[in-house]
Image (cartoon, rainbow, N blue to C red; front, side, top):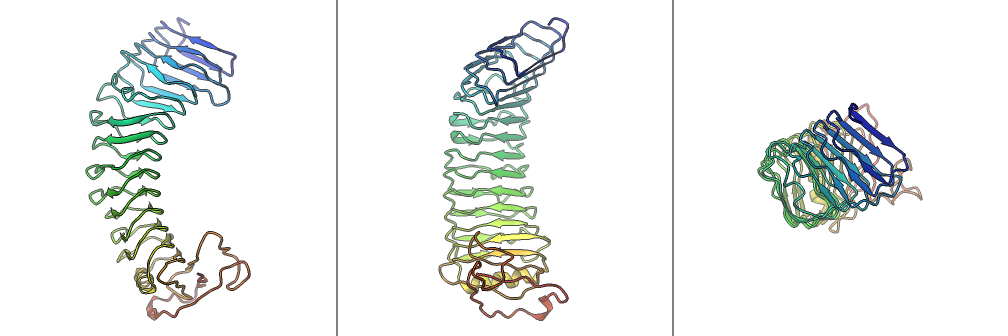
Length: 361
């Protein structure tokens, strides 16, 4: 196609694809072809390569993308046997995506220029060992979930980081001051230091081995720390928190925000070692901050179980587990049997003229 700027092949019975030496070709899009061979090398104007084989078998193991000096965007999805991408002299890739393939090499980024790479998504491949991304000083978003990576080194420019379902025993993000999102569940992490990260608003670190974590960002909105080994949780700085999951830990003490400005918040502290005094103090503290629409789960705490029948919220719900049916009345056969402890809440904290939500254990 010497005079064409776009090559598109969709749902064709292609088994071999070679499109090379086209000086004006700018984009290639190959979808749902049962490919065994792909070569798109030597196209000096090519800036985008896209291929998705989601609904057909793809048998090629190598894709050749050599001498593509203008290639900026690479998107390869569902090439189930692909283990090698050959892109010598293709240095200017900005967005690098290879998802649901078999890439194994930890040298796959060696030929990319340090100033080029801004986004990497290599999920559900066979990457393992250690990866060093520090030389990519414009890298913003990195997603390498569903691999077997054991160590990562990261540049300070990272804003969004997804490393879930790997084999990381440590993750040094303490100096990544631009970081706003980290997704790291199902690793082997024992600690996570976010104390200096004032822009972070989303943390997913459930199902690790965490015994400690620092949560100091006022911008925190969503925090998932369930199924770890935490014995203490301090989220006193997270005044805008909307979701906190710390169930299934060893928590004996929890420090909530002293001032709360979120309007809808869900907190799950069930299945820990909090006693009733700790839970009482936490609820009173949250009441004093005049938050609305708080939903709390705190049943199955070994040292005591509590629930409360009034508080400064239009909806206060505390129940044992996800089998709770919100629309069932207290004491019905489909809801947990209530065990109400008395709690003294100052009358200034009680919202009048509004429906007070039910409390359950």
